[in-house]
Length: 235
Image (cartoon, rainbow, N blue to C red; front, side):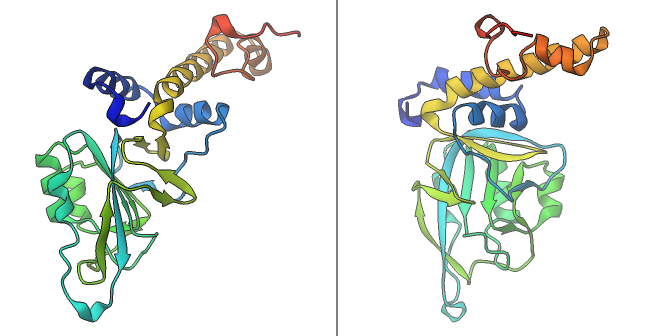
């Protein structure tokens, strides 16, 4: 199921469920399906913020510094409300592709966050507006005469993981990951089961069981399955 085939009601439901899930549980759910989805090296830049939304992808390429201003950020006019901008600058650390103006426009247009395979600047503004920004770091040097926009809404690769337009992006203090659109519903249901399993284990330990006993009781080896679907422990 692609992003374009999801109804508005389905999209809203997926986002509502994601709001209560952390990336650790979602990562475990993705692991259970054999999907490598963590965007390695992409970290939260504004403490306490998180994002979830469908990817609007942006691909940059380097240019000769002497060529001058390249208008590399006007794509923001095309980003639908509710999206997460996923911007690939090939991990480059010396040329920013996000800053003050883009942050203000994103907030005005209800963009849900930005993920950058590269760096951003104007973090004082980003932090003051509590805008969810995830990147490899921060640097002040502009990319506007160092990079140019190559394409939007194309697959981009971050740390060996492909992000397709319309994939579901989730980011929090633990990092950022991508959920393929056609797996989003299954991944979310498995992540809910993971969190329920862990909650049950913690409660059982609080009631006097050892951690080993609690894990065995609640089948921590199968945390992504709903309780009724788990195979009873042989122990």
